[in-house]
Image (cartoon, rainbow, N blue to C red; front, side, top):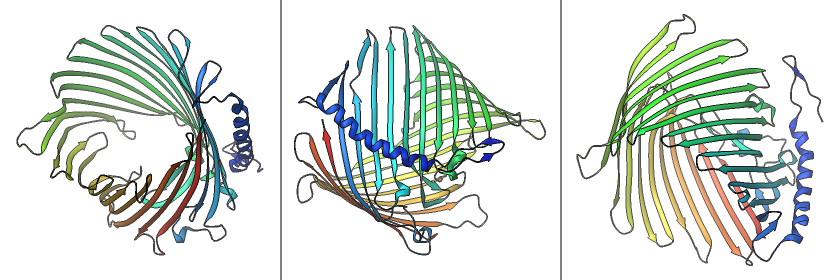
Length: 495
């Protein structure tokens, strides 16, 4: 176990992967212990009775082979580590039927535990678990409720503007919230308090560690059926342990909607956001006012396609941090959409849509259009051609790109014999950054082939066999494609 180090005058987190190695052993013993503990209480049906509630329990185990455990391109591979490996993963899932603790109070419990154990790559051994308790008390006018839960999971984190660069990011998340809703005639009052704590195992992701608290209060009034008034307050406090920084954001909102037409009506929205950086005491204020027509205004010019339009005006006030001058801007808001679905024949269908939208909040104008041609070859065989084009942020990056995607999907169920399914997906994508002086277009070709078969061995026991092959090739990588073979042989048992 590594010792912790000092960062910014405070103790940083220890090497968490070592801690998880011990936790993984405990998880495996917990799976076995839980099974032995619950076995005497099992009934003949899928439901068992423990305490005051009915429960559903499922046990699962997988044995698998993965030819590219790091999901890496050839130049990204580590020569000192095995590229392929076998692993097995036992798991237990437990969920309850909602049970009543009082005349109007119900509880739910969901939990799961699993362990992914690699034969050679022990650095990838990971325990996976989750548990959640929810409750709710419903009265004629007042509803109270809450939730508490914990989850340890693994996310794939894509590098900025690099679809092939994927790495593992184990995250431990604790969540809790309570809420109260009051409904009295035309008045609705909502309050909520949320807390989330997120911790990443690997040091490269520790910057994402945070503790977040959200407090919310809102009032909605509907004095007449077509008029709705809303006022809300939301305060979010986020603390980053690694840098010892804290940020507080408060949002005040007022909204009025007058639905004079079946498709919508007039609206007015006022929003003021105040952001405070606690470490530097820097304050940023922004006020945005929008009003206009909200809803899909039908333009019945032609029978095909179906066309809708919405419009409005945005007024924004933002204080310049350097000069202290409040900048005021007016911006039009437009959204134009055309869509349709043609059943050309009994087995052939053509669908498509096009949307043009300008977003003053994000200072972005987007034009997106999609098309899909679907053909039903037989009752159990379907294939389709798809096309999508849109300028958008790629994988959450702030870099805006112009993206075109061409795809082909093929699905054949009950292939050769029952419950054997074949899938084939091929896509070609071109992505070009919009804000670079000399942008380079990334061209990515992806193929996915899969076979899966589920066979019931008994009323409660199922065997599942899955094979999956993926290949991704990009002109940003010069040493070949990212190829991966995955084969999984597993069983599920519903008690």
